[in-house]
Length: 425
Image (cartoon, rainbow, N blue to C red; front, side, top):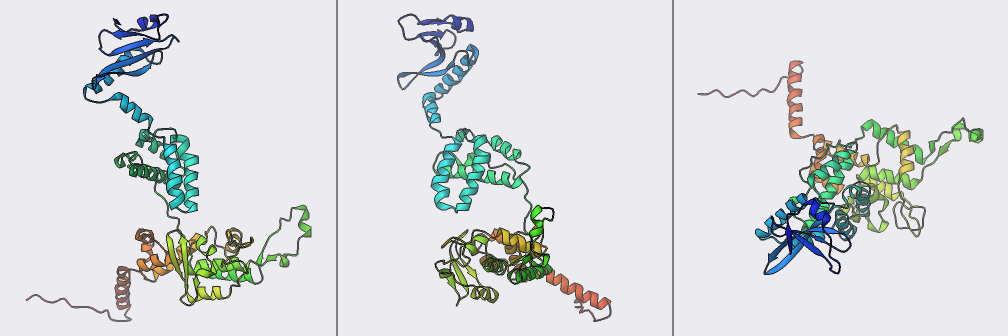
């Protein structure tokens, strides 16, 4: 067995003897550190040790990619770990079995999201993974993903704070799912501790004047129709109807859908996908079997029931708001809502803002957040809590009462009700 100080010069000169499959040179200063030469000309650094009565050997790296000094330093670490009872060969084998973030994410989507989440959620998760997360972190072993890596990804999306926060939440969900399967540790979640971006609330509440204009626009849309414009610079503009004839009557089902959204606070898909078989007109409830938050009732006011009573039923289609295809529901309300919103001069108001407006009226009337949450179908109280600032709470009412009493007394209209303090005896 050849021994000598392993240096670059000696390693470069090392050759495998003809007829042998390998030749080793062992370092005379660090026991167990060696370099092997093969007939192919490849030379690799190794560390050799005994464990459980057997001689074991682990490859450190190839000569050329590592210098002798770098290999010696790594050998010291490995041999030192062995002295402390570690098995570097088993650790390396276990590390090779660790899946990449992409592999874990694929199974997360297949076994968890596809079966337990809504189709919309599945679509949004896939978009975040394919566009943002996987290109940056997908090839890394999941245990090698560090907080600094996630923080950099989050920071790179600073111009899209909402997307950045959703990526953070999704990485955290994937990690926790893997932790429940004992692939990683909960405590090592790399998304924890990364500061979320502040998100502006996107709630928009219609005023009474805006509701008035919206009602007028809906009546116009379903009677004489909404006006449409012509680009007079186009060659065919001269063939267009006269200005007083440029009106289009809206689809009555689309108008009815918008009215129901206004009057129930329901989500868009909950109304579009609702079926007549789930409507209980006697009790004033639509029983949804599969809303965003699971099974849920939509409570119908007298005004909402009136809208439903005027809706015709389409033979062969069970949906309240039927679509163009046989048996299908209407896909969306983008075009009719855009036209009605324009007529009502509502600016950038979204259809979902009708739901916020429904909740804001309930909060302003002091109906209580638990009741509003039930009407909206919220599964978590904190979801409804964002409307708390709209409540006419007892402190506000007390301040109004006291202020009105004092103001009236100061104006000489009515004596203020003053409660004398008791004198101490």
